[in-house]
Length: 198
Image: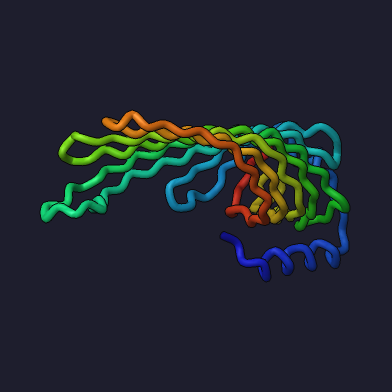
C-alpha cells in the first residue's frame, strides 16, 4: 500500500513542475506491471488514444495457500488446508491533465469484473467446503505517474470503488449450500506500478 503522504507529494510536484510534455511523445503502446503485493500480481496493456488519454486493460491474478487447525472439540484437531485463486479484468481510461515534464497527474475511470474461488479441505478428508465470489463494479479516482526516463514511468493512484458481489458456498458431507448478494463501497490506494512505452 502507498502512504497517502507520498501521493500528496507527487501531486504537489506535478502542480508545481514548470515544463509540459505530450503523452504521445512517450510511445503508442505501453506495458504495465505492478509490484507484487502479498499474493497478487497485476499486468496491463495500454494504448495511447490521444496526447492526454490512455486506454488500458489490466489483469490481476491472486492466489493463496494456507493450513490451520480446525475448530473442533476433538483432542486431535485435524488440519484444514485452504486454496484460493482469483482473477480480475479491469478496463481502464486515464485522462492526464495537465501533463508535466517529469510528473503527470491523472484521473481514471475503471470497470472491473472478477472471480474468486476458495476450497477448504480437512486433512482427514471427511469434510470439504467451497465458495465462489463473482464481482462487478466501478472505480474512479486520481493518481500520478513519474517519468524518470522518456519511455518509463512509475505511478500510484487512490480512489473510490463500488461493487456488487455474489457469493455461493457449499459444505460437504452436510450438503449445505447458500447464495447471497452484497454491495461494497470503499476507498483504496493502489500498489506501485511501472509502465514501459514503445
